[in-house]
Length: 465
Image (cartoon, rainbow, N blue to C red):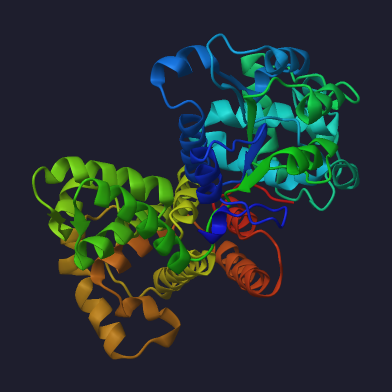
């Protein structure tokens, strides 16, 4: 597939690499990089299996470590040592830090923010990497020390990042790492020199190094060494729902065909509604559906509904509910979930604007004094009996300034209950912020995730500079 091609311009793809390995033409080293973790891990598994087909041989000739524990000297010694058994020896370093520099800081910050709530262990590892690259010290940032970094200093440390939203993630990352007692790895100048020499002409024939990384600075000499001596494959997230769907269908078809099964058109539609055609979620769902289908060859929409729970629509309702309830952590978590499901940022923006407008109109409605005996504490049944007639009359009168009255009664009921959490001035300010954010989403190259997070942080009550 096109999204599996590498960044070197040589057009290396996973399919081509596997074909070469099948012919016995393995390279001494491979770099698999990109932010589409599912495809990257799938490629890693397929390449290691092609290099060492027998599971028993992999037990003795496959060595795997993580980037946070990597040691260049130990890695080089392993690469120049012949295998215990005849055949290939493969050394894998997952999430290596050898290609990182200040040029990857923006994407690193994005991963830290995304993972703080969902995957704190990986967020902590990313943040310690952030400290190593920037030269910041955890001890200096603890106990509120991070506040001493002004905007000018931050922009000097992290080029191209204004730092306006750092209050939303930096103190959490500092507290997380301080609680773990984590220490950043120390980088020695020129530490990859020996590895570059080993990869060029120092390994026994048949030994192989595989490195994986989410981001890589292509200007690094090690990157160029691997591009020359080995193979580089990139696996970046597919942009756009249509392309996502094509990628999922292509990979799912391969898996379904092996099992002699297929999805009906309605089942594909139901799968997209449930998962947003996110690769990991969709292909995980395919595995469950294959098991659930048993002897059936065709999987129907009813099977999808039975096996998979939450939908994108469910998540949207959770976002607007958290927003109107001023619950920041659930709001941010749900925002990230929607973006990961492939929901377009402008679609999310539309939902947020709609919710704030309803709250503003409900606030006007409360201030108008035209709801008679309305009380915030009344349940929905009493609301329908005592207040709904007045709402119907307002709708009939064509009250454009309080257009929320034309919505479903339960929507109005919820908006009225939530509107009392906000002042008129706050809601007016949020509408202005939304207008500016909408313009930025459509006309600038700013990160949509950061822009939407800023809206949620502001509306839910956290102060943003």
